[in-house]
Length: 360
Image 1: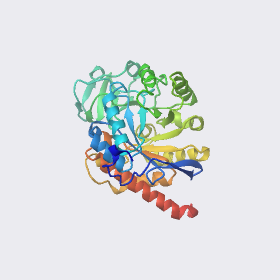
Image 2: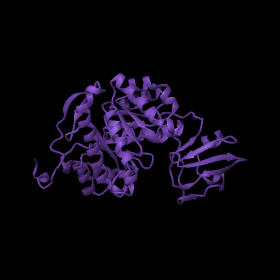
Image 3: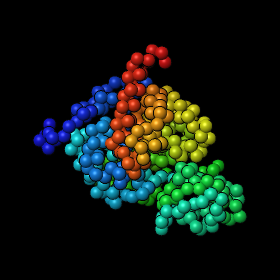
């Protein structure tokens, strides 16, 4: 080990040498002593180098950077810090970038808005994209911030059915409507052109609707000289579910993105939909990743709920090749503890599988 790393203790990370095998019918690579990949999300809570190093020590393989909030160039200092921490920890840290894609988001707010239940808003009180305003009709239901806030369009106003604190760049969903949008924005193309420079190893394509979206992404990656970058396809709506087989066939990894997907299917049906996607991936021997609210209580708590560890455990035993956390590490109070819980629970699930495989 180089002298620069000699003072760093690695309780879980010994080397990044992978061990290849077969799991649920498709190849896996064993990192950190467990088979599953563990991803965090970069943000203010983990921009400190020592925090990032500790997260790697706890078993993290890589991190997601959400490009809906800032470009690669605007995030250059955070990315540099991330790569430096990975090197210090003796890890080849994967960098996943989450593109903007055909996702609808609010514009910029001057300051956070507290939307009170039963309040009325004018449509121009919110920085909505023009295409959303054009598509709105009487009694349309609009979900903001992954459904945390719910509005109804009434008499050219918004009635707040479920309130909350609204901040800039949060997601928008009009229930029952899919607005026509290109797979890649101009900002996405600019970020892809810089992907190699910033050490990007995988691209997460949001709201994949069909194979055409992925072919457009592959063509852009090829044009930028980045054909080796992995493509993670996010299943986030019914359209993606309807074209699931062709999406799987054109992806390196399927992302079961339960936030927006839970806006498009009844929440009570979401666990079954997750299992259906998992089964389809296993059938085609394509790995999948599970994300959204896996450890959301740990944003402000040092320990998880029983339901959360059960969620992680079940994702792994259903065949997930990766699990990911978002706000838990980006803005949470306990980013390293979150990774430890992911590692410990995924490891327990893999040990359980070894002793129960014959029963499945």
